Amino acid sequence: MSFIVKLSADSQKLNWVLLGCSLLLTLIMAVVLGALSGASRESPQRKASTYFTDDDGMRAAYLAMRQFTPAGRWRSVLMALPPPSAAVPAAQDSAAPSDAGQAGDAAQWDRVDTLILANPTQSLSPAEAGALLQWLEDGGQAILCLAVDWPISVHQSAFRPQKEEEEPASSHRSERDGFLRRLGVSIRASDEESSESSDQAAGQETRGGTEGAPRTDLDLEPVARLTGEGLQIIAGRPGQPTAVWKSVGEGRVGIITDPWAFSNRRLQRTSNEVWLIQTAAVWGAGRTVFDEFHHGFVRQRRLVSLLASFAATPWGWMCLQMLLALMVYLLIFRSRFGRLKKPPAPHRSSPLQWIEARAGLLQAAGAGRLCAQWMHRSLALKLSRSLGYSVDIDEERAQRKLSGGDHPRARRFQEYLRLWRKLPRQGALSTQQLTSLARAAGLLSQELKARK
Image 1 (tube, rainbow, N blue to C red):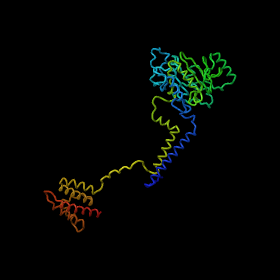
Image 2: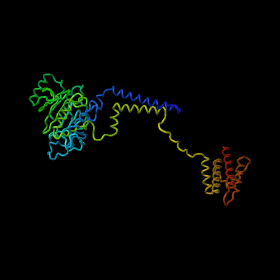
Image 3: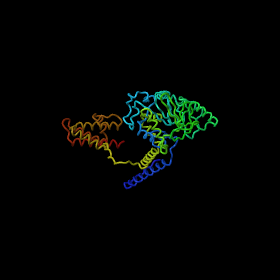
């Protein structure tokens, strides 16, 4: 069911006022709903990425790092990760930016000393895992903030990291190949074992070589503990370390069981960025990159994916609502915005204009005899259609048959035939002769139509 509302010129101003009020009300509602609704844990925006400025992002840590060390974003696979400075002689180390505050394009760097990754959403491929291990053995430093092991999959598909309120991972999940598993380190929930097994694990860890006492200012909220051999504790107690160093060849990897240790929300009330900057600045030449490839940020993103990400935000919902309100307004009132366009010129389909155009052409060419012959043939065609058989009005038998009798058609035909025979066979025809012949042909045509 459709309807049309016709508006007068006086009501146009009221329509604009109503439209403005509707859009303003939609904007206010969208802002209020976006402010009241908290960020969903299933939202794709919940990533510890340096691109996000919300509580879960790491934008603040990235900007603070750029002030003291050369920092950039890594948006490619780890196979392309450049070697660390420790693997190259100091004389050849000329790829560093001129000052510590300058952050160049990480994709064009020749050296990378520290890799930072927090709560990734993409799995590692076997080739990436091998390249990262080789990079660590060459002298690189990696800082991983993980609540679960970083899985290694043949297909580099997305995986959902374990959330804080979820139950500990099952034994089937722990058997999956992971990067920490290849390092000989495992992540276990703090409450998944009894006190007896915890004491035994603590004794094994002590005998296995957990070295050092926690000497750090890190403020963590871990949900798991780390087990393995050759671990140097960064935070936590000897029985349940929550942040450790693990030596790999000439390099090392730092494992922190709090995925949000360096998030914007945590940096508002802690000084964890101080530890992060000091750790990265003293290792090699201090060139640091944040891995954004495994957060889903490749070098190029298509317009469709960017629009889909924007539509999932409260501002995206607000724009969709405004677009919907505008479409409803246009559908109901059938109106358009902007100046009125001039209507297109009408097509010349009038019979009088058609006759005037042809008459003007024939008059300009001086083709009076051609005009008379054209009227004569047109009349013969109309007679043939009216009688139902072919008629040649130049034959005497047809002329006698059509002019015989006392009915109007015979009289009209006799008049036309008289004028046709009076036309001179040579020379130009006058306007009076053509007009008389055309009038007689027109009266005969009308008589033929009346008989039908």
